[in-house]
Image (cartoon, rainbow, N blue to C red):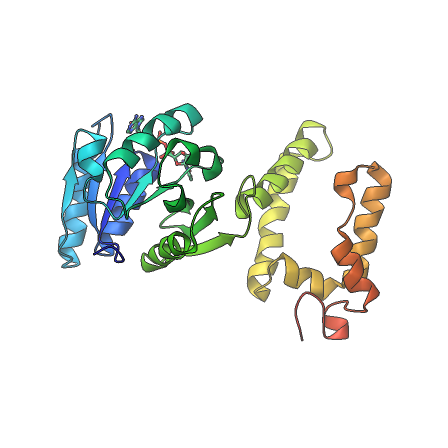
Length: 277
Ligand SMILES: NC(=O)c1ccc[n+]([C@@H]2O[C@H](COP(=O)([O-])OP(=O)(O)OC[C@H]3O[C@@H](n4cnc5c(N)ncnc54)[C@H](O)[C@@H]3O)[C@@H](O)[C@H]2O)c1
């Protein structure tokens, strides 16, 4: 069956690989595993087997000692080895050589776009990024295409992510850091500067942050809904103030925001902004 994903092969069963194994197993997928180290793996898999028995899920979990054996009957392979481009570029062709032609190969990399790996495989239309956060406590995954990833591959990957009750975050074009990681990176970057350059104590930042986030959660706001609430004309002026202060091109608010302001689409107060009210 080419269309249905039933067998998942995980290459690299460390911190992330193990979460992917456990969650996929709990949702009824057969699992093949390969890792260069067997440390703690058997105990971990025994725990997973106990959990799936309790849930009366009937699947196979097999550990192999070569990549070729691990991927030979896979429908989807997820590479979760350390974040080293050269290592991933060594592993991808080995997977490609032995996996069935229909299988999709995904990397769980936190930063490497699949376009940096696609040239080492033949099946350039069947590779993608599936970047999980934490599968149990933050069930989100960025999904991103390479330059030749087919729509079928992307949709199959997306459906699989949904099937294990993880929310896929579609990245529309290649973006370093995907979506959420990129936003988080901006937050981290400025927190570190505020602390290191002595603008505020780190405790001040940590005190403010949960109060700030709670407001978002209570109101079911994302950044865009929040900006609509404030008013896009106000947001534009604030961003222009930052831009004038720094003079950095990167601080200039996008013209698309200016267009909305000029059209009078200012958010909640005009009943139209990023959203319609
Ligand atoms: N740690 C995180 O919070 C996190 C979150 C999202 C994505 N990621 C990404 O997931 C990937 C794995 O990260 P991790 O935190 O699970 O790392 P980890 O070090 O916990 O696990 C990596 C595993 O790969 C194994 N390995 C090393 N070389 C191998 C090889 N040649 N073949 C097979 N297995 C090999 C190691 O023995 C180890 O068990 C990285 O690309 C990382 O960027 C990590």
